Amino acid sequence: MGTLVSRESKVSQRRNDSGGAVFGGRNNYRELFQGGQLVFRLLIAIMVMGAMPVWGGENRQLCLACHTPHRAGYCTSCHLGNPASARKNIAHAGLREGKYTRFLTMDAQEQKAGEALLTQYGCRRCHVSAGQGNKMAASLDNAAMLRTPRGMAYSIRYPVAHMPNFALDDAQITAMINRILAGAKTGVQSRFEPVSVHFTATGIKKSDIFSKKCGLCHRVLSSRIGAVGKGDVGPNLTGLFSPHYPKKTESEKMWRAQELRRWLNNPRAVVSGTRMQPVIVTESELRELETIITLPVDTLVNNQ
Ligand code: HEC
Ligand code: HEC
Ligand code: HEC
Ligand code: HEC
Image (cartoon, rainbow, N blue to C red; front, side):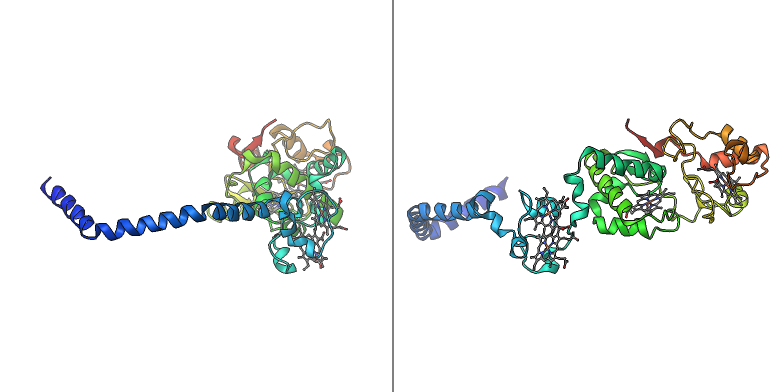
């Protein structure tokens, strides 16, 4: 208590020491500010208005130094990029090219076509897009936020080892990316980390039944033992037992252990003329296969 009081008194003492001068100075300043206040406010207002679109802020979109407008609205609201620079390389940083901007204006039919491709190639057996799919690889809703469309196109054209190379053409990739971008707007809730399977070497049993009997021709992302198999002759079996595994026909049922058993015994009895030969597996091997292929419930995202 004592120290507090004495500190207080020191402060008031100091105030008294220089009291007159400080008071007088502050008064002068206040006068000056009051006199200039109107001019000052006007200046601020002009600056703010200049930055607003209706008052000519649009001109600050230096994109217009090189381009002529072709649609109403800010260039950058559709194409991103940096409107503050008249230098192409800087202005185009993070640019969304015309063909990847279509998702903002495309009609329902175009949306459907992109969606059909995602389904046909079974992208959602590994990825979540528009809030649906398996969490076995990066969320595409997330990628849409973090990566440029061109970067995503590169990832699809030159896929990592455990993503199949679908040998898609430019039009297909463009359609898919527009669908992914459109879907990301509704898939906000699915921005999560994927199950870390593909890059963790630990836990992979070299002698697992998949590597031994299927891995020569197939690959699979297993949340239990990681990325196994190194064959690309047969389809990637990730999420085989999930609703996102590509079906050959609309009416086809989801794969389950029972269908897999029938398939392995005699593939041609299921799909006539298929290239896969029968593979002999024991009952316990089949059960082990099942645990490798089956995805835990928390890797399935299906909001519908
Ligand atoms: C210095 C001039 C310059 C500025 C500034 C500039 N661009 Fe460009 N832009 C070009 C040129 C030239 C091309 C032709 C393709 C190329 O050379 O990259 C182009 C191409 C484009 C394309 C088409 C790319 C494609 O493949 O579909 C888009 C979209 C685009 N610009 C948007 C913008 C936006 C948005 C801004 C402002 C943020 C901007 N540009 C600023 C010069 C410029
Ligand atoms: C409402 C969204 C939107 C706005 C705003 C917009 N664009 Fe585009 N832009 C598109 C779409 C979509 C395409 C793809 C071509 C198409 O379908 O019309 C495109 C294509 C382009 C292209 C490529 C043209 C080609 O032949 O492929 C350029 C360059 C471009 N825009 C520049 C601009 C500039 C510069 C501005 C600002 C003055 C701008 N855009 C504003 C949506 C937009
Ligand atoms: C068998 C699983 C699998 C399938 C099927 C698959 N991918 Fe992938 N994809 C991956 C893996 C693994 C990566 C590497 C990124 C990661 O670690 O998640 C990847 C990466 C990507 C990326 C880059 C993502 C990023 O965050 O950088 C895109 C985009 C992509 N895939 C799109 C597709 C599309 C489109 C399809 C369908 C045509 C597809 N993928 C099918 C496994 C798959
Ligand atoms: C010698 C190569 C080879 C081996 C070994 C092999 N497969 Fe296949 N598998 C294929 C080929 C090729 C196809 C594609 C058949 C077609 O499209 O006609 C296929 C198709 C499949 C399909 C159907 C998938 C679909 O999308 O239609 C399943 C399921 C399957 N294999 C499971 C397995 C399992 C499980 C094993 C291990 C027990 C295994 N395969 C071993 C070559 C092989």
